[in-house]
Length: 161
Figure 1 (tube, rainbow, N blue to C red):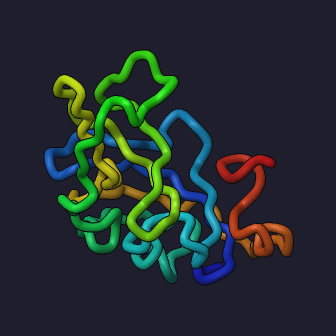
Figure 2: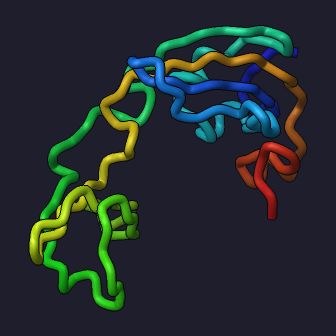
C-alpha cells in the first residue's frame, strides 16, 4: 500500500539540522504515527513521503518554507514584566500562550530578559532552518473512520484520548 491522503502511516525518523546535530528522533521509542494529508507533520516531509510504502527509506532536506517557515522579526516583541502577572520568576526559554496578530492564540518563548523588558519570540524554534530527515516507513494502512473524523491517528505513536 502506497502512502497517500487518508492513510495511517508509521515512520521511524531522525531529524538533524545543517550542522548534523540531532534535534529529534523516534529511536528508542514507538514510531511516529500520523494521518497523511491532515497536516499532522510538516508539508515538506509529507510531500517527500507521498507514494512511498512500508520498508522504504529516504533522506530528505526540507527548506524552511516547507517546514516551520522563514524566521520573522515581526514575531519578536518587547513586553513589560508587568504583563506576566502571577509568574514569580521569569526565565529565558519559558513559553506562554499569547494573542497573535490575527487574534488567534500562539505560543511565545522568552528569548531575553533586560530589567523590566521581556523579549518574546513567536517564531517556532525551528523557523528559518533547513531540516534533514532520515526516515524509514514502518507501516501504511487505511485510516479508521474515527481517525479520519478526528484528523489524527489513535494508539501507539499517535494520539491518545
